[in-house]
Length: 327
Ligand SMILES: Nc1ncnc2c1ncn2[C@@H]1O[C@H](COP(=O)(O)OP(=O)(O)OP(=O)(O)O)[C@@H](O)[C@H]1O
Ligand SMILES: [Mg+2]
Image (cartoon, rainbow, N blue to C red; front, side, top):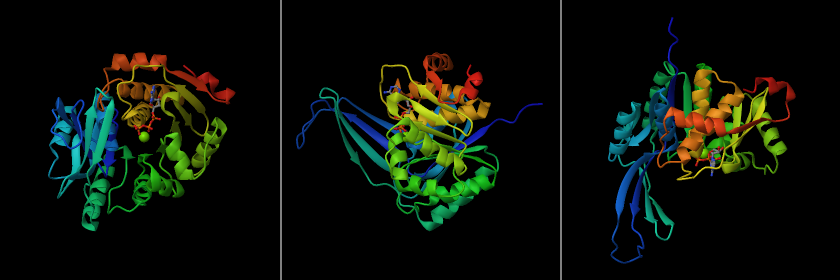
């Protein structure tokens, strides 16, 4: 008997197309020479879809995509075999221009406005999500909400998907996170970074005990796993029965963009395989390390990820009875 494959859908309401222009020594108000120009399809859910496809999982990406500049997204999905279920919306997906002066090690950002959702579009999106809920096991809701989308969007969608028995992961910030954390039920998986969690709860989390208290509060209200990431310090992963801290090794960082998106992806990959918490922490951190040691939302080959995983320090925090489960 074959086990049905674990299918993941990622939702990106507010994708972004990054345009990186390198022009060393450029000066305002003058004619400058550039060295290169590159477009990259981005947005947190798009990144998660890209990482999970690299890992070999069946992935569908949905959300709102402008019909004026979808080419980079379509090319990415085609190359990686991601099923494209994005709604096409009249207008452009927001563009982020990055003007890089590599000589001065300086980047200037210009963020252009993007789409505004209408009630009709949101009704279409609801229908699309309900259809995807029929044959996807897990949903990753990621990133900011664009104009026109209510801040309670993730909270309401989480309730619908969980009622349908789906596993829901949420990675967002600001008011959207705050509302989702105040709602019932909570997503199964939350991966805020420490700053996002502090902002959403409205209090500072100075030490590990504060972070643990905050995570346990969320577990008590229905979350199954809370992973609080802290950049190069690693992450604290908390479930009802276990707490582990995962510390990455020192690596040559190329770009930390997408470190957290990779961690979410690794936790979903671990879920797909039914890994225990310590192994999930190792896997998730190896995805982050894979992501930050190259440009773009791409993972290295499995052997390299396994080598990173072996270098992650995973410690069980204050729960001696869980020690036996360490590999
Ligand atoms: N400089 C670094 N060195 C080693 N590991 C890192 C570094 N930065 C991030 N990581 C790894 O990536 C994980 C997630 O990073 P971080 O907490 O910065 O996520 P984030 O703030 O959500 O990032 P994102 O920009 O993708 O939203 C960390 O737990 C850690 O394992
Ligand atoms: Mg993040």
